[in-house]
Amino acid sequence: MWQLQGRGTVQTCDGLSRRDFLQVGTLGAAGLGLTEYAALQAAGAVDPKQDVNGIMIFNLGAPSQLDTWDMKPNAPAEIRGPFQPIETKAPGVFVSEMFPGMASLGDKISFVRSVFHTAAAVHDTGHQMMQTGRLFSGGLETPHVGSVLGFLKGRRGDLTPHVVLPEKMGPTGGNLPHGQDAGFLGKQHDPFVLNADPSAKDFRVPDLLPPSDLPVVRTDRRRKLRELVDGAVKEFESSPQAKLMDANFEQAYRLMTSTQAREAFALEQETDAVRDRYGRNRFGQCLLLARRLIERGVRFVTVNTFLTVFNEITWDIHGSVPFTSIEGMKKTVAPMFDQGVSALIEDLDQRGMLRNTVIPVLGEFGRTPKVNPAGGRDHWPQVWTVWFAGGGIQGGRIVGQSDEIGGYPVDRPTTTAEVVATIYRALGIDLDHILPGPQRRPVPVVDSGVREIRELF
Image (cartoon, rainbow, N blue to C red; front, side, top):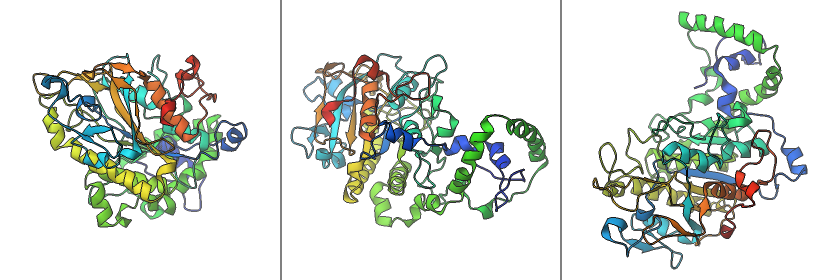
């Protein structure tokens, strides 16, 4: 949470100083930075005619391919699970009966049923690869797709380019980074993180407080902290980084006091009918908020369906407590998800926004083909399903195929890097563009000659 307090050496007309921002590390949280968009456009690195936005839905916990979007109704009972497939609006394309809303929109959705990776079967590694295209190593973190988009195309008006809702991913067992930051691009390109539940009755965005909220009562503890920080600030002001700070300061202040920004987060302006349609839960209201943000100028929103696998029921259906079973997924997770995503796709389509908003729906791996003794399924990165809608993606398609038990790809094996490359392609980002970092190109598949999943376009 940003707190702007105290006096500084360089003040705006509202009495807010550059030093005040330094005291809380605001720029990293705001995702602010200088844009080279005009130069990049002139060099052909970005396509101005393909100004596509993105809403990434990340299914933390990893949905079971066999019980959702790659069912095997002819497999033995211990493989196929308890659910029946239903045909979508796209003839010959089936999904689980748990997703009637998605089924009604089958002509707008395309599935990739052959995604795999060969890294460790832990949540964190999948989070990294599916949001950045790479597995982190040697302390080097690859930037999230949304941060790369923001770096290349910059902000629109007062709004930061990339927002994460409702919070960044929390602990999932591996104690590793999850890939939701700007990585080697630098903290100034990190996303703005809501850190609030938009379904709460008293929902507000604490980091967008108006100037009248700035004064606070100082305590002795804050005074001592300030003395320490003042020394660091003095040292900083003589450093090369100060120039970047000066350039970004006015933009940061403008965001925090912006009518445009507060308007974008004002969910109370939506009708009760619209809010009910998305679902009066954290996930549903995050999707509605994502639509508002994109509508008002944010380029990319990442929505985490869940925040951790440890203290809430998620897609991580191991069966035993504290996890849920396959049947438990039907009662809790699937209805919430189906309602929210179908509302989002319909809403964007009706508003004429779907064609220039790509929606990648991802997970970190799949689940074991065989149901375990606890009535759940365990981690399985050998194959799983992701899906896309909007942003130039052709609906009603199936790319790739898993074997008869949903255990391995048998047609068109698809790497996590290819999935990320597909998102970049939809966003109009040149995969050959050289980034200012040690990994150079946005995704490594370019180096091996393999690019996006072209069958989707």
